[in-house]
Length: 270
Length: 271
Image 1 (spheres, rainbow over the protein chains, first blue to last red):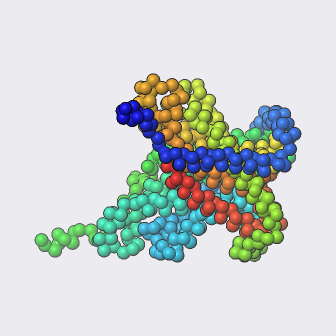
Image 2: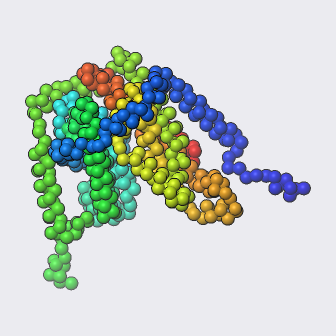
Image 3: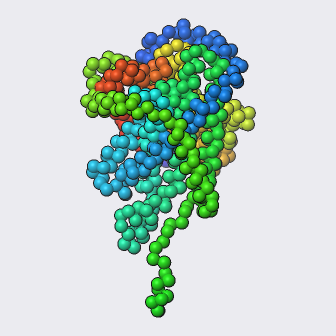
C-alpha cells in the first residue's frame, strides 16, 4: 500500500504556491499587453495599415533599378562616415579608460564618491542614443562631421567603460599582489599588474565598438551630423528612391566589410 | 660573488610589446595610423565662430539639464512617454513570440537544413539594417505614429533574440537531449523536456535585456516620425527649449536605470 502511494508522488520543480504566483505573473503580463496594445493603437488609422502592401509594392517599384550613376557622389560621404566612426571610437576609448579605472571596485581611489560618479557617467552615455547625442551636438556646435565624431565618442564611453571596468574587476589579484610585493608604487601596480591583464579585452572591446560605430555613423546625417546619412536624407526628401537603394546597398556593403575586419582582428588578438 | 658580476644585472626592465612583436611591422603600422589620423583630421572643417556661438547654447543646455522643466510641456512629455512605453512592451512581447520558433529553426542541431537556411536568412536581414532605416520605411508604408515604431522594434527584436537563442540552443548539453530521445520522445517532447528547461533562464534574461534596448530605441525612432518620446525631444530641441529637453533626457535615463535594476531582480527570481 505504501508502495502505491509512493508511486503517485510526482516530482515537481516548484511548490503549488510558487506555481500559482507564476501563473498570476503570466496572466498579468497578458493583461498588460492587451491594455498597452489598445492604448497604443487608439489613434492608429487602420485604413493606412491595410493600404501598406500596396505602398510597399509602390516604393519597391520605384527603388528598382538602383541608380548606379549616383555612386561616385557617395564616395566622399562614405569616407566621412568612416572617419566619424574611427575618430569617434578613438576619442570615446580615450575618455572611457580613466572612467573605467574609477568605476572598477579594485582600482577606484574612492568607492564612496568617485565610483558612483563614474557609474552615472556610464549609464548616462549608454541610455542616450548616438542619434540624440548628434541632435544635441548639431544644435550646439553646428552641423558637420565634428558633431558626428563627438556624438560617437560620447556614446562609446558607456559601452567601452562598462565592459572595461568589468574586465578590470575580473583581473587576477595574485598578480597585482606580486607586483605590489616588489615595493611598486600605485602607478607601477596599475602599469605592470593590471594593464597587461586587461590588454586583450581592451583591444577586443575597442574593435567591437568600432564595428558598432560604423553602423551608427551611417545614419547620423539624418539629423545633420555629416556622412552618408546626409545623402540618404537628401534622397528621401526628394523621393529619389533609385538613389536611396544605392545608398542602402552601399551601407550594407560597408557594414559587412567592417564586421569582417572586426571579426578578423578580434580573432587575431584573443 | 664579486661586485662586477652583480652589476651586470639590468636595473630596469621594459615590458615587451604584446600585440605585434615584429619591430618593423609595429613601426610601419604606427606610421600608417599616424598618416590616417592626419588625413582624416584634415577633412574635418570646423567653423570656430559657429562653435563659439554654440558654446553659449551648450551652456544653456547644461543649465537646462541641471534645472529641468517638467511642468510646462508635461502634456507632450507624458504622451510621448506613454507611446514609448506601450510600444516597447508590445513590440518586445510580439518580437519574442515570433523569434522563439525562428530561433529553434535556426539551430543547426534541431532543424533540417532547408529550415535552418531560411531562418538564418531572416535573422541576417533583420540584423543588417539599422532600426532608423527600417523605421523610415515603415513610416512611409504605415503612416506616422507608434504603429510603425511597434513594427520596427518587433523586427529588430527578432534579429537580436532569434540569433542569440539559436546560438544558445546549439551550445546546449547534448547528453540531456540524448537521454530524452532515448525514451522514445517525439520532437515536441524533446523541445519541451530537453531544450526548453536549458535555455529558458537565458531566454527570459535576453527578453528583459531587449525590453531595455527597445525602450532606448523607442526614444530615437520618434525622430523620423515613428511615435514615442523621440518626437517630443526633437521638437523641444528644435524650439531651443533646453529645459524641457533636459527633463526628457532625465526621464529616459531614470527609466533605463530602473529597468536595469528591475531586470536584475526579475532574473534572480526566475533562475
